[in-house]
Image 1 (cartoon, rainbow over the protein chains, first blue to last red):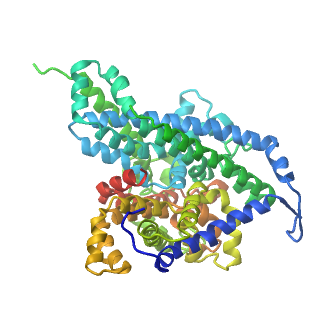
Image 2 (cartoon, chains in turn purple, blue; image 1 turned 60 degrees about the vertical axis):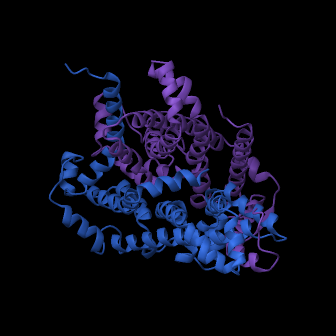
Length: 292
Length: 284
């Protein structure tokens, strides 16, 4: 809020109206309908429906397939977040140190941001294609009996590799800007005090990057939950046997392919609650401020 | 004698490996898109250019039945551009107006309206995808640009960027403008918009990329081939490939991949500094 403001009038409502109308029609209405639907049981033709309280929740969430999907989502999010953050941090620290070719490195490392997840998925998928995929041949030649169509471990490996690949550039950009905002004087003082560059990283750089890292952890978890949909859809499609299906992917397959609207809505609501919890944690931790 | 600096050398080595890791898949995709189906099928992926660049891209871009049953990649390119530009422009305009109302005016419903806007940040489109589809279907907006773009704009990320930015604008500007007799609209158009130029450019760039790369929503709400974006074309060609057939058309899949990648990458590379600034600033 500004101290100096325009006085009361209908004008502000005119300015805010477009946004609010769009939100009401395309956000509040669908969200409310989704929640309502999660309590309904429809017959196979969608002609009649009855209110069944929490039956949809019980039927979907306590099912083995949902629990499997939830487990996969958690492991997947954890690995994607940790791996892409670690790799991006290493690259950002090095890109911040080098003098020759710094610009070229930065460009080459950040441009993949612009590639759509499903496009990355298709490219990766073809890399592992049994007919032409070089990585497929390579892994098999190395003695790994690789087949992501049959082995759920191999399928997870493919999905995680592509998801990490896609996320490195975003993390790199943020880490680099975080590193560049560290004052020169601090770096000089640390260089005088401590000769080992590895120790300097752990005692100075890493703590100073903590706020950026924390912020990125939240971004990466959200990414792994939602945006990886396109990657999964163009690589494994959740196969084999739903072992690489994230929760969002399951909402989609149950709702659109299986036309189980009530069950799918119930899963959506559970996902909403998860996102809300994540946001609350985020705010709580930001309040405590990770600053050194 | 020159002393070798092992630290710098290892730094370069790590960066080169990283850069290769990030670029090699796209390079291979691009090179493979310039070969014939037979070559790819016989010899696998290619790392050097082949002789079919023009014929492959011509077939994909302009010939009916080149990639899809009917629609050509140039049509899909147009759809993608419309989505990217429409999404970016719509989002910037709407969020600038809303942020202006929130920061510069005192009005009764300010607090509840702000909370409604804030709520949209918490629930991404992915979790309300099916009811959104039903709502858009009820309004007869399936397979239209309006139905494609508006639900995506509903999330209010842009409003928060502009809110942050307006808050950093010195108060004296408004005082001075009011002394000169400017009304609310004049102040917005003549002062606030011009000083937000860099911010607008940065957000337009990011939102263009985000819009172009949309997948789940267009996938669900476009059923007519004529409305496919390039990113949705990717899904279709993936399905054709996985169903099998006589000779898999890998070169077409790769050509489509490159076409879907090129515009957003070009935008990011050309406006690199704005893009980085926009991305880093916007997330604060």
